Image 1 (cartoon, rainbow, N blue to C red):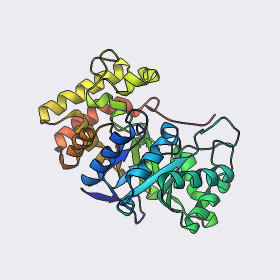
Image 2 (image 1 turned 30 degrees about the vertical axis):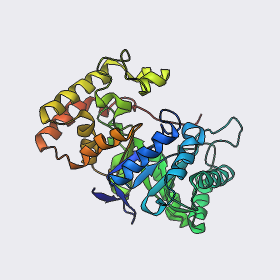
Image 3 (image 1 turned 180 degrees about the vertical axis):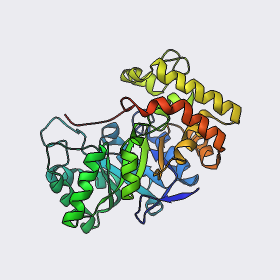
Length: 325
């Protein structure tokens, strides 16, 4: 497994990471633990979760799975999206972040996280308050590095400017929707990250499974346990525009003798600024299938074909973005 620096930091992460949004939801505890162990055994060291995944169950399961193996993992969690209905149960205020970090550490059965990410920009809290709080977390030893998710380029750059002027630790990573089906980060976010030495962590690298080929026929006939089967809201993504892209990627993968998932992940690994690509799994077999991507070496002609068929997805709206009201 190849390892990359996360941005310009000294933190090294596996080029393929494990997303855990499904743990405790589409994958039960026993299966989720097997998935984590399969990922670690396969060379993955980057495990991504959040305080709200499966109503906190994801963090609890990960904490159980990592007992005795914590020091081998670059563990990241997030806070900021709503975790309740109260006014202080969302956002990136000092009060909210302090409470949520302590809760996450307890569930994860650890005294530190390697990367703590703000889940989305908070328009109601001064950035200086958020960044000073994160700086305190790092000084306390409870957090090693900090990052942000779902920030627009201008929001991220503003945060970097405040950190520099105040002498705070700075964000080293930006987690964003990025895939063949969503190249919108290439317009502003990725140029900013390249200029500032920030690592990109794509989420939805397979566009929720569309790029895996599983939805070639649309929502009808979706595999049992898939997002389209378990989440009625996912149907909004299954437009003909995305489905056609999925079919074209599958055709190129078949011609190359590989799977559409592996090809899509490999394309991302070859993009500028990308440090690690997080992909979820609900079965150990999916981890093994995704690991094929790390050994795949698409030639220039194939990469150019993928660029060509995905070019229309540089414009328009992102495939996904999560924001506070």
